[in-house]
Length: 119
Image (cartoon, rainbow, N blue to C red; front, side):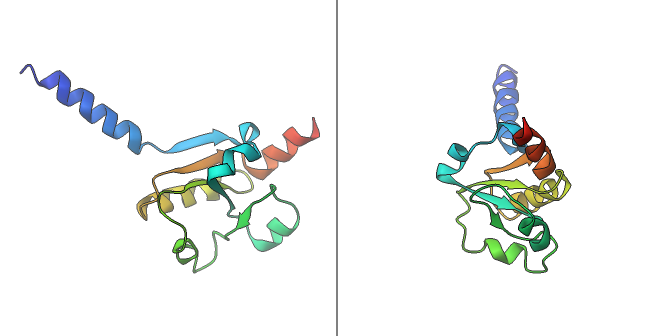
């Protein structure tokens, strides 16, 4: 019985690390990607109309989406964003299922970032 609190604490820590990570895109800076990769999961057409500096475009709707990550080490930190946040949240879940444990969804997407940039 006296080990129950220890077991509960251990399980809480484990589940805490498995949680989905996110960050408002308005708090993102280029310093964040010094040891990571910034990935725009919008279509090439959307990407061509504007994107965050140093972003790699990997289209969420591409049939080969998952395969495009084969050369990226699973330990790398990945920042993903899209137009508003839906596709990047789905991409984050998929990448997590593929073994990428350090994927950060940039909430609000490119639209939110453009709004911040105007001020």
